[in-house]
Length: 109
Image 1 (cartoon, rainbow, N blue to C red):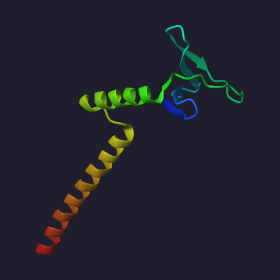
Image 2: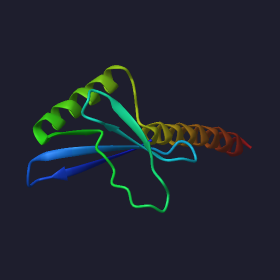
Image 3: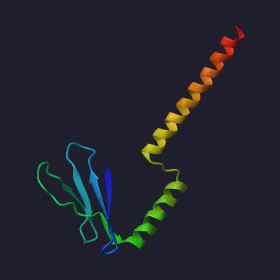
Image 4: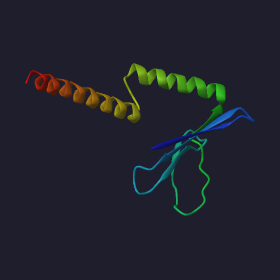
């Protein structure tokens, strides 16, 4: 899933686009205006204008994002990048601990 945010400073609106690329067929997920979200297949090689998942004034968008971030923090939801970084840090710490033990043994010989 990919999310794109486009800021339009001329009319002070923000548009968010959602593309599901989890399978071999990419799909545009958007709000159709009738209270429903619609999934539309993106045909490769054909120009298709993406339809926005969300379009709202930038101030409202900031409030929505702030609430989402607060919810994610409260429920311990993190991005994949953060999980990857944490994993690398833990592996590095473990490696350094192993190296310290190895050097301690080597120094005692």
